[in-house]
Length: 484
Image (cartoon, rainbow, N blue to C red; front, side):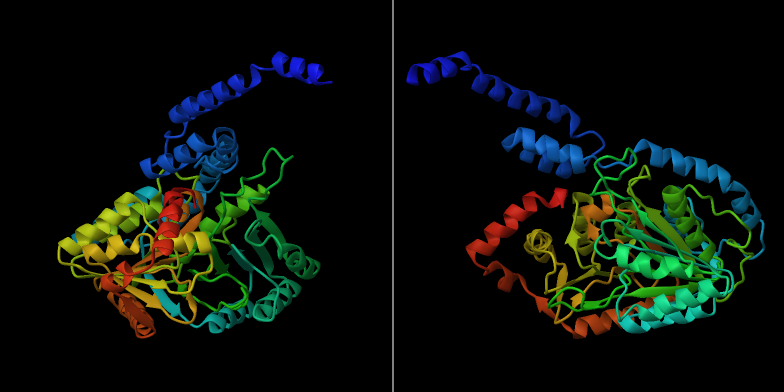
């Protein structure tokens, strides 16, 4: 018996050598492949994983590591742009589609956003900030109740519960009176909720689809890490919503209550929100939404100059990261950044550092509570660096502040779905609304002052006294920050 085992081992003695050689082949091949179209930070994170666990690291990279959308999605976007060209040409000729006059400093940001997102700045809008969680849901439901032609909802998370009941009821009533209702939800974000939601809405005549569905056996399945993280609504092409809030109760995670920021807008810019919805609807259904009723002649409802900026892996440039970095470099007096997740890449961190050194007052508002352990630890690993350069960090108390917005001086307000982290910059489909308006910025400042009042200031002295175990945990999580 032992002779047989010994002879078998002798026969296959070359296997360990072959396996070790294969690991080095994987390392060398991935050393060439991983840095392609990737930031140095992300490349180093992946290569570190692959160096220690070559085959497992390569498998994970193949599943979730390539920072670009499948070719068919990119081609579909190009085809849609051609199909939608007549709509764009008609709207551009309308007298209410006006490029407002701005200062040269603001025009540079406008041009950058237009070149990246291919959507124009438009004047004549009215903007309302909704900072109360349930009130924003009820306002959306009230607008749906008055819809006459269509209702379009696109949300990362949408659950049928007691908080969203007003929206569900309004959708059912709208569909019953002949209004076309379309709902898109992210397949992963709403993975445990979409079946119940669709079972409620589809019998009423609401058209429902999952965005970027996953699956092992579908050629068109999306990777689990590429998500549609947008939150937007369009009613009759006249009213639009976007911001940080999903359609779900504020306490959907045990022990955590979420606080959000939503923006309601009317005016010509709603047509550009509609275009973003139409693009995502086409990607999932191959139905082109190009009827004139969906893109009505715009009415000027206010005096706000606003611009929609979509971003995501179907775009060649990381639009939300570029616009934030550009705005930081353009700030002259004060920056207030509010985000639930802050994991900066090198350009974002350097922009904050340079702003402080130029004499700009820089505030970062984040939650002291955490809802994702690994992300929170990676985020905390940057606090010491930020405090050392002079960034003022405010830890929001009690609730989890999920709002995502930025103000630059007294001139620019950016509100949307994007976090200040590498995932939102590279992997997620996101949407932002830029408002070049002092009054909107002033309104957002009031909400930021409310956040300050409910926060405690983190000091460098306090933070450097944390224990060795938290330091170790945070630094290890930081190594993975490009992968989060």
